[in-house]
Image 1 (cartoon, one colour):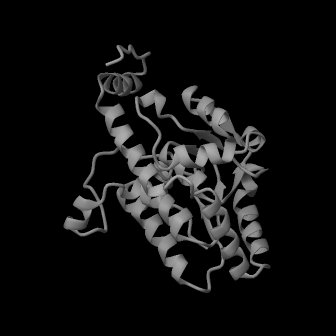
Image 2 (spheres, helix red, strand yellow):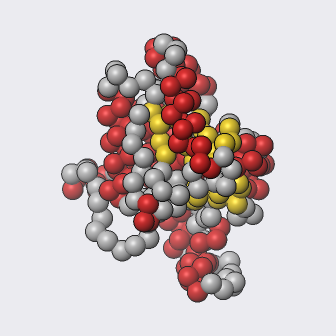
Length: 251
């Protein structure tokens, strides 16, 4: 069972160090036969507030040369670790906000248990970006194409009960019960053979892999770079920081 993300003062926003730490923890769990189920939750009152925009040194565990060759980065490696490399069930306890890459982290899990007041939002249109962190893969799989399109285009915020209703999560509990229910559910899964669970996940992931995951992650990264580089992308971020309505020109 994975320890919670532990940056409560930042609402567990994803720094490079935390992001790669999640990848490394999942990869370590894959190799440990004593771990049958992986749990993921946030410390404090939030699951994950997305990317930490605070300026700071870039962190990567990769060598300088490997870092230059890596065209996916942590934002894609999280999904590859949880879905492609890890054949053990990964259960997320979504306590509080899950936004942007934080939502991508939650949706990468195989199962989600959400608190009643949990707030799930993509948020990319608001900052002039396009989805990354695997959301173009995981959201349509969970919700269906049109619901995923509307959710992201409309920049909607979905809370616990609705998240279950539209397929973003499988279960809602009261906010103060998320951690306990997460532990209880993981223990419940451990009643089954770990071999059975791993083969089950392998089969489920294989059935949805008609689109190559790494290719799609590269496509996401290329798109968000284009979106952020546009004049509209810069205007969206400026308006967001200035708390005003953006003025778009289509350039």
